[in-house]
Length: 268
Ligand code: PGA
Image (cartoon, rainbow, N blue to C red):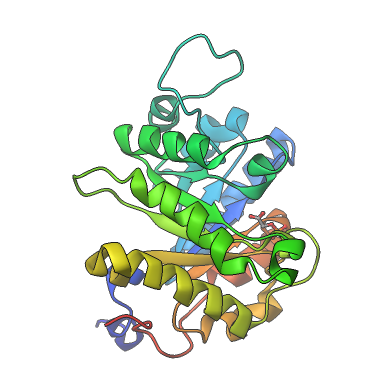
């Protein structure tokens, strides 16, 4: 029999819980975390996605085979191929079994000098390779203090939306306030909702249909005890999890995410 709770959760806005392992773990850890996530995904309503470091992608793809969990990469190069030592192209990631790729994570924007232009080129490459980009946007503490949050989010999002091709192209957004990443400080549900609603409204101004469908994840020190409050917000469609994704029990708990209320979001 169909699960009645799924009826209010349209497939286009199915919750997504993603684990971004960043530059952590050995191959043995990767195997352990992948097997645990594969198991968690079997019982999850949410879509479960892992973002391992490049060297573990093929191994993790093998371990996830037959499970509903999917895989993505933490970044792709802005060029499709060529003499870019150390670079990894979107097409290589697709060959390795990725369905998703993170674009514009703040650790690459701020630490790696990725500009909006580079982020938007890497999204183009992702779409060409058949991957779904997860565009990460977020303001720093000083930008928030200066009242520039919407200006920053608007600029980062607009650059990416400009890159959208004419044909249908899948896209997920992740609101990741820089002040919340790896700090133990989680945005309050209201703060997250405000930013998510702003992002959805920006998408709606260009493409109302996409705005209703696009998933907007929250990322920044997410832990299981914060999950319920955030999921009660109408525009929070899941999580991009860093630190807690390295703890199989915590990640399994997050993978049990269910909508708490307002399942249809703020857009008609
Ligand atoms: P965090 O990282 O959960 O460790 O704060 C989130 C992210 O950077 O995606």
